[in-house]
Every structure is written in structure tokens, then in C-alpha cells.
Image (cartoon, rainbow, N blue to C red; front, side, top):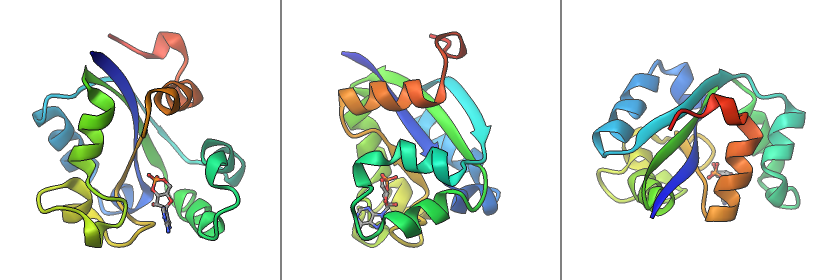
Length: 139
Ligand code: CMP
């Protein structure tokens, strides 16, 4: 099925001037950008976005990292977009990610792992709504 998923280009990438390289990979792989915005997350916004992780030991450091520079929120559309995007991204830990994946090429650590992607259809719906109004998505 044609799906939408939410991707976030993380602060490590925006700091390194590599936004275009990540977008280029996503588009070349066939995903379509149907919504996109740059935003500096506040701790409140980041905590709300990552609420499912709020009891994890890595929560505080991850929130600090996500607020350390602007991010780019992207709504992607394509056939099986949710799983396909996760495959392109690679494993959460860049050191465990397969060769050729975004996190393997661009990630430096488990926090500075270049990119986020929704992990399920309900998560994708919630995360797209978190960043975008209906009229900000262009199908
Ligand atoms: P992301 O897909 O954005 O979802 C939560 C983020 O927490 C994850 O990517 C990682 O960047 C970060 N993180 C830090 N430590 C861990 C960990 N031990 N397990 C999972 N995610 C972690």
C-alpha cells in the first residue's frame, strides 16, 4: 500500500551541512517528499514527540541532543514507505547498521544517528500530525 511516514533529519546532520545529501538519498530511493519544515525543537516539544521513551535511561541525553541544533521534519510518501524508509536508514546504532544505509554512512553515535523514521502505521500517523497540519502535506 502507499503509505506516509515521518522522518527527522537530526541535529548532527544539520550542523554538518549535509541536509541535501540525506534528502538526495531518500528521493533517489523513490520516496516522495510531501511535506517538509525546519524547526528548532524545545525540550518540551522533543519530550512530547518521544513520549514513549520517557522512562528510558537514554531519554534525557537524547532530548538534549535533539534540541542542540535545528532539525528537518519530512513527511515521505511511497509504497510501503514506513518499512522501506527504516530499511534505508539502517539500525538505530550506526555501528550495527548495514553498509550503504544512511546511519552507517552518516551516523556517529546512537544519539547522533542522522535520521529518525516512524516504526509503525500508528506511530507514523501520530508523528506526521505532530509536525504538520493537513494543508502542509502535498500529495
Ligand atoms: P530514534 O529513531 O529517533 O528514536 C529514539 C532515539 O533515541 C533513537 O533514534 C536514538 O537516536 C536515541 N537513543 C539513544 N540511546 C538509545 C538506546 N539505547 N536505544 C534506542 N535508542 C537510543
